[in-house]
Image 1 (cartoon, helix red, strand yellow):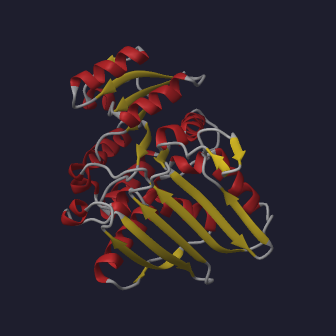
Image 2: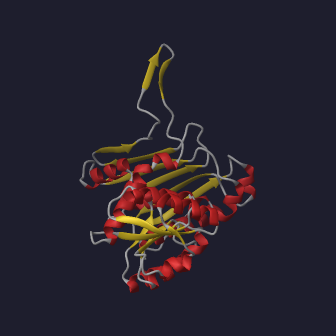
Image 3: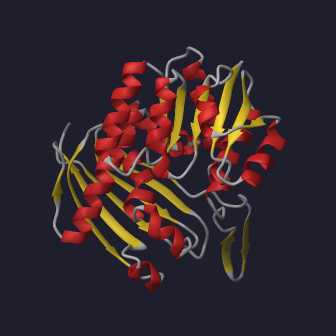
Amino acid sequence: MLRIGILGCGRIGQVHARSIKALDGAEVVAVADAIPTAAQTLAATTGAEVRDVEAILTASDVDAVIIGTPTDSHFSQIMGAAKAGKAIFCEKPVDMSVENIRICMAAVQAADVPFMTGFNRRFDPNFAALRARLRAGDIGAVELVTITSRDPSPPPVSYIARSGGLFRDMMIHDFDMARFLMGEEFIRLHAMGSALVDPEIGAAGDVDTAAVILTTTSGRICQISNSRRASYGYDQRIEVHGQRGMLRAENQLESTVEIATDAGFRRDPAQHFFLERYEAAYLAEMRAFVAAVTGDAQTGPGIEDGLRAQMLADAATLSRESGQPVDLPLD
């Protein structure tokens, strides 16, 4: 039985706890949170003990940790877990600093512990099936990847101010998906962004509407668009165009029912937010992490994937601020 400690008992910690409860071969034995009531609530639903972070990191009865705390605490928790020889699952971003991520990479490699970065969208059944067909050669060589990601509404400005910005907080998922699908690193990026949804977001120094174009050495192109507002629900779509055709994954709707009347055809809206849309992905992600720790081959994104996505997010932030394309390092 894999014994897991959860650091951070907020929304994402609760999601992972539910996934673990649904799996054989793993259990939550300890939880920690800066807000005592949050830790106590999650402990009550999992049967785990409430401990402080340091106690979980050094505990002999904890084999692996899930890090779902604020980003500025990730570095110290990764370093502590690696030093203690524990397997690590860390939510994105690994850290806001590329240099700090590199330090964490060295510590994880030296400790030789499994590490997974929480890019759950790789595990979405539809996106995973699209990639499998892509790798099987169904449409030949990839030429153009198009990723659309729009939230139903923006987060509070208080969150925006500490999020690192749209590119590091929201689009970082899409940067990872772009790499996952393209199978080739990007060498140039051009980003644009505006505050069109909420002027307070602009006043906080961020954008809520953005587009990025990325290119690879071979000239393949990826285009990503993000918005903090979608009146019709959580908009998550992917299209890959290749030499012999196209692969496309559409939105998940609240139901598959469609009504047709003299007024036309009407379908249900898209599922409202990430908790519903990616429920299956979170479960598959945690199943993969448990399998990786208990001896099966790792099937998920590692710490280098977290590094690469952060490098793209940093480049997009720089490009948007300068108005110029940014050339990307290959190592």
